[in-house]
Length: 396
Image 1: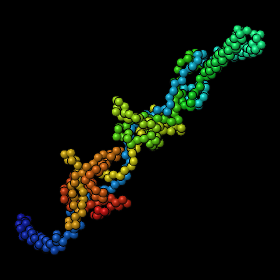
Image 2: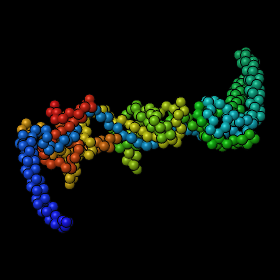
Image 3: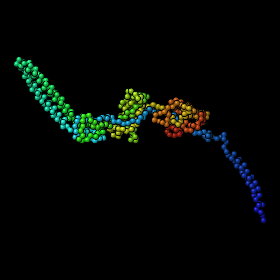
Image 4: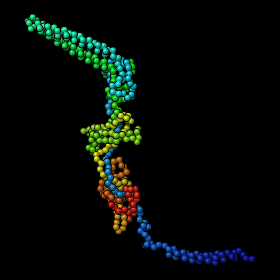
């Protein structure tokens, strides 16, 4: 009977030796096969070399309209206070607070009894003065005729002339009293001086009004105005008639057209800014006084500028640099670190205007700029005007 321990050394000895020998032979054959089929590093195409693909931006001069945006409040074009001009008790009310009223519309009517009585007295005085004038004129004519034949004395003639003058003066005085009484009668009707909206109108029927007592406020809202201020550099580019665009938070998505109607000739002594007035047509009633409005104002004529994306500029110790990708006939494309001068562009917070250091048509790196080094070989990818990507396109 064979012991199990007698065959264990054979399996772990000779058997394992044969296995190791077989694996070694296979390794030799396999290694030779890999060396025979592997490509030669010197024959690798340039496209497979480890040259990073770099996204770039081609500089172009584009039209730019300088402008500024200022927050303001809409105000009525006109705002007047209406006062009672005669005394009396209110007999009738013709409108309510916040009503839209037309020009000449009756707002309140005061009891006209006393005013009508004054008119009647003035008319009676005129009639009496006319009668006295007729009598005085007849007496003067008679005395003048008698004086020609030396029948009437000089004293009688003078008295007749004086009576005629007094009668004429009395008539003029009566006519003035009538005009005053008619004016007082007309003022018993408190009317709207122009088309607008009533505010602070709280008069009630039966209330007694006195001359000078405020009745209401009237707002002209057919056109609204905005008062804004500009710096000295901005104001020189604005003239009366300059068009503006207005946006109101209460009307999202809508743009209203405005116009500069006046420009101050001197700066405010406190703010050192120059006030100007913008007016917007509101006959459609889409806007209300007191609304917050943003005024977008053009400053001068349009000009061309070259803009850079903000994140393409490196700020190092106060100096600004970009990486320009230039074509090298011998080694392909290389990065060149270049110092530039830029300044902010109003209303374009993600871009900077190129002042110096770059020319139109140059390629500027816009990706991985913090990993780039001066003179690094890259493969540029540029967004063309038609939206396609071009690799390695030469500068125009």
